[in-house]
Length: 96
Image (cartoon, rainbow, N blue to C red):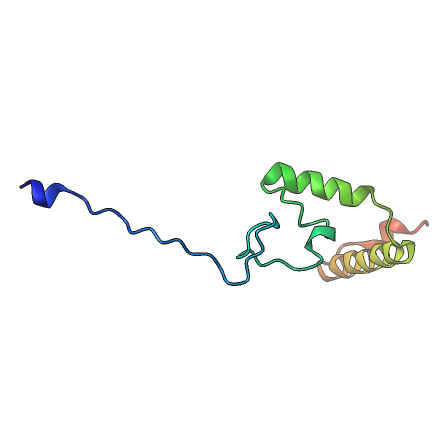
């Protein structure tokens, strides 16, 4: 009965990769892009709080003024198209 209850031990191998640089450069198996450390979205913060804080930081950065104006114009046009489709009375925006 004791023979069946004993668990086998896992084998251990002393494997060292062929091109491993043992100077503390990190994990030799980790593949990452060269520019990952410069991307603001690759900062390692995950979860809801990290996403919100990253979004707030992106809003604080000044963007291109032409892009912001273009975005506002596109959103306004889409809103007016939506109001026209649902038959909203657009005459309230004009003075009599």
